[in-house]
Length: 169
Image (cartoon, rainbow, N blue to C red; front, side, top):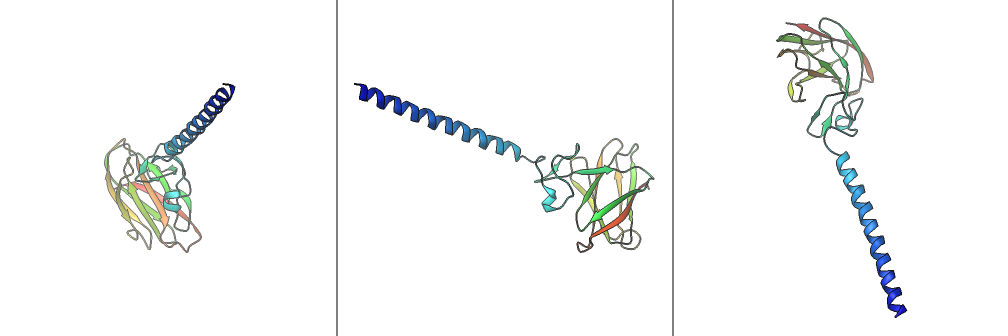
């Protein structure tokens, strides 16, 4: 009878070990799954965004999160350094509704996209401004935050100093 008792103890220990292993495995998988939801983790916007992770209150657009590098002010130049074809993102919240014009001033070819507060693309531009600079003109609503994504058009350019402007049109 002690042989049967020993076998029962061994079976109970094996069942306990298997149960613990399964609990640890499922806990680990649940943690990995919850960390891969849109809007978190690092992403570098398809490999290039000068940032990653959550985005200072921004959001996600499909599988990509955006890191906001700064804020644009009306009628004030913002000097930035763009690298290759990596986007930098800037927020802008107009105090009154109307048409706003976003432009760049650089000797390099610049490109930009304008997003709404949910990171839906509203418009984009390549060479609408002076030379090869972008210019985006769009109607914006007061109090809503918009995001401007800016990059060099030519990815072979290593880095460039660019000034960004926002004016009311």
